[in-house]
Every structure is written in structure tokens, then in C-alpha cells.
Amino acid sequence: MNIHLFPIASIALAGLIFGSFLNVCIYRLPRNISLWHPRRSFCPTCTQKIAWWQNIPLLSYILLRGRCGNCNVPVSRRYPLVESLTPILAICLYWRFGLQPETVFYTILFWILLVISFIDAEFQRIPNLLLMILLGAGSLFNIVWPIFAYETLVTGLLYGFTLLWVIRALGNVLTGVESMGWGDVKLYAVLGFYLGWQGLTATLFFASLLAVIYYYGRLFLQGKTARRIPFAPFLSFGAFIVVLGGDVLWEVYIEALKH
Image (cartoon, rainbow, N blue to C red; front, top):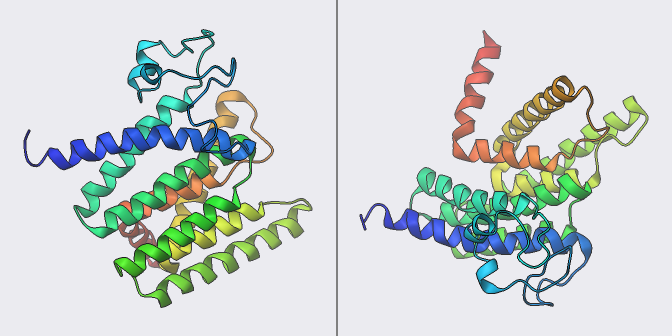
């Protein structure tokens, strides 16, 4: 194998394996099912345990034509989507940072954000456990490999919480209803820990832009949209844009406003 392709192939394989585990987290955490018991995956419809050959990331979905091997009920498309996105995220971060600690640092972030995004999209809530894991993993990682000064991390955390708390409070007053969940506020604060206040501002810009596009796109195509839109997927996508180099786009936008 070409020496330059070996890291990418290794990252892709690891991503596929972890993607399967992330699917377990997405299904079990919001339903308060243990991640470890039952140890083997099971079909949500017939509850039969899934054989190992039926649980190979992506390949089993293709071979079984997207259906359960026991009851023949269609399997959610979320499973192959998550298993595809997990290695893609890691490969993009490797392309951005190379074999550096930042690659691992941000891969942990976005893999957990992937779980948060799908849970929020389905249940419109964000498990506190995942936010605590993000804070703990980020803190521990930064102790082992000091990437950022802790002053920057703490400042970003406080800035993120304060900014979205103010936006939420204003939205509640103006609309008379709860305009944003507390989970979004806490998630934004945690993102500040990883991105700093500068990256956080750009993240909110991109997330809001994507949410508006989604809202009006769905309104145009379907003639209706949900009363509440889960914001975690858009915050996650916005953060990913920033980490991949969206700060440059943000600076261009700021410069354009000055003229």
C-alpha cells in the first residue's frame, strides 16, 4: 500500500468500527438502555440479537439490502449514514491537521457531536452525560498534549454560555414561548471550550445560516416545517466548518462588512 494512503485507510477502518458503536449510543442513550447490556446489538423491531456477520459496518447493510436478517423489517438509514460520516469526519480532520494531536482532539469532539446531533434531531434533547464526556475528554487531552492555554478554553466556555443564554432569554421575551432549549445553551458553552470565543462566534454565524436555509428550504419543498428545529446538528456543522478553515470565511465576511 502507498505509504501516504496507509494513514487514511487506517483512519477509515477505525472510523467504520467506531461508527457502529456510535449507532449503539444514538439508539440506547436516549432510551436509557445500557451501552454494555445486552452486549450484542439487537433489532429494535423483533429484539433478536444480531449475528456478527449481520453487524459489519456498511457491508452488512448492503448485503442485507437494508433489512433485518431475522424479521426482514427495513433498517433505519441512520445506521449506514452514521457509519459513513464517522470515517469521513476523521479523514477530513486528518487532511486539515495531519498526524498531529489536534486531529485526535477534534475527532473526539465531532464523533460525540455526531451522536448528540442525531439524538437531538429525533428527541429534541441533548444528554448531559455526553456534554460531561466532552468536557472531561477535552480537559484530559489538553493535559496530556497541551494544545490550548486553559485561559482560552475557560474564556470560550463562559463566553458561549453567556452569549446563548442572553439570546435564549431575549427570544423567550420576544416570542412568548421557549425559543431555545437549555441543551443548546450548554452545548454552545462546551463548544466554546474547544473552539475559543473567536471560533464560537463564527460557529454561531454558520449554524444560524444553515438553520435558516434548512427552514426555508423545507418550507419551499414541503409547504410546512416543524415548529421547533433541533439546533445541535447546525451548531455541530457550523463548528466543523470553522475547524476545517471556516475562520478564513468568517474573516472575509467581517472585512466585507467594513466596506
